[in-house]
Image 1 (tube, one colour):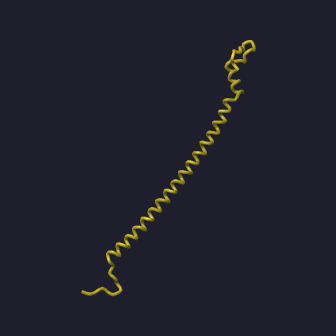
Image 2: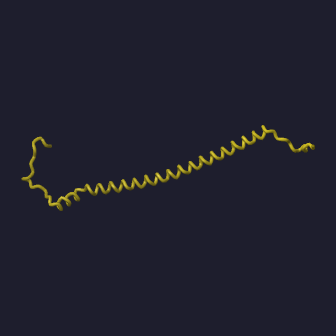
Length: 101
């Protein structure tokens, strides 16, 4: 049997285990870093979508406020009352109740 050349060293199992452990830690770190970046990107997209939804809802609220003001306008109410046949009461039809402000 021949002996291996001097420049080829025999690696011990302990040394191989150490290198494998270091390699596994490095790979795990890469995977965790990638996962964190993906989660960060997903949250960024979700925040952007929610900001868009918020903007849409603010615009809807503004439109509803304008519509409410239009519906409450005294001119509109007077016009509808006249269309229904209602008129302002004559002074003889107005009764003041005692204790009323």
